[in-house]
Length: 176
Image (cartoon, rainbow, N blue to C red; front, side):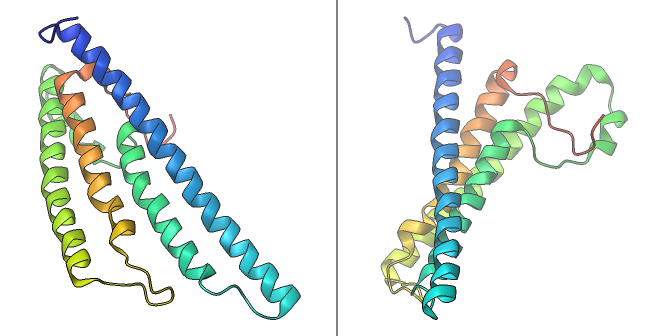
């Protein structure tokens, strides 16, 4: 196995992306489960004991935010983002592979820039010692999902630009 073999590199990246998707999807499911359980427990406590569970709603908001933000990376992995399809017919079919690669590179650049600002945001939050309002815990560990989602998506876009064969078929918002 040599570093210069593009087939080996592509296979390694494909395996990495598959594992990345599994990890992100698992965390997303756990977060959504946490949201549902916290809200159900809060409602049941209100019904049976007259009071909800302290912090349950705030916990549900945080776990729902984590799941939703990870969804950005998961949708990138599935090529499910909405895009203006009306422009597809404006260019000749022969340019399509080049335009798609440029689009992937541009998307990676945008994700990296926003990810950099997300890192600065989380670092600022940590430096200020920002805490949650309902549950007074530091919030920067929860905010780490912001840079994660952008850099994870940037890696995917770079992989799709480098090896277009790894790019899944785009999901259409209109069933055919």
